[in-house]
Length: 137
Ligand SMILES: [Zn+2]
Ligand SMILES: [Zn+2]
Picture 1: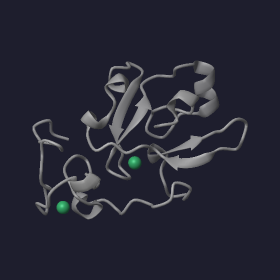
Picture 2 (picture 1 turned 90 degrees about the horizontal axis):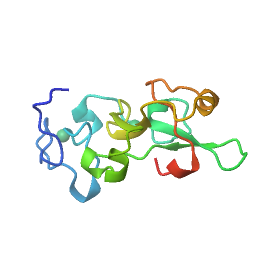
Picture 3 (picture 1 turned 180 degrees about the vertical axis):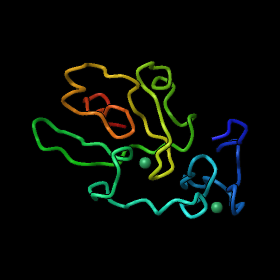
Picture 4 (picture 1 turned 45 degrees about the horizontal axis):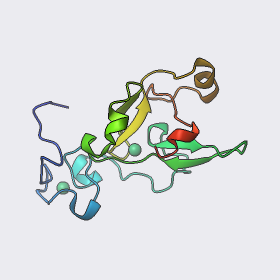
């Protein structure tokens, strides 16, 4: 993505159809588009448990020793929407999800090698964050 492109919230209109971006909390894809159609991607799967939902968009939330449940990762429309404390955490990073077109949080490096091996590396190179303190992701 070119750095010269204006992104939401500086950008106020969809790059393709010129519709107003982000009104009343509406999705803004890649900081540029009002919809999957304008972004030129397939409509995102609606269920986090669906087999076609990619790992970059969902996280396995474990409660205690249970099997865990797939939930969607939190969707941010811009870097500014990410808590400052998280943005300043050097072990936290964010990436544009190719599935839903929003930003998700990930880890830049394994916080604990044994845990990282246990949880496995996700397709996009980020380790899944499943510790209690990060369920909000
Ligand atoms: Zn549009
Ligand atoms: Zn996503």
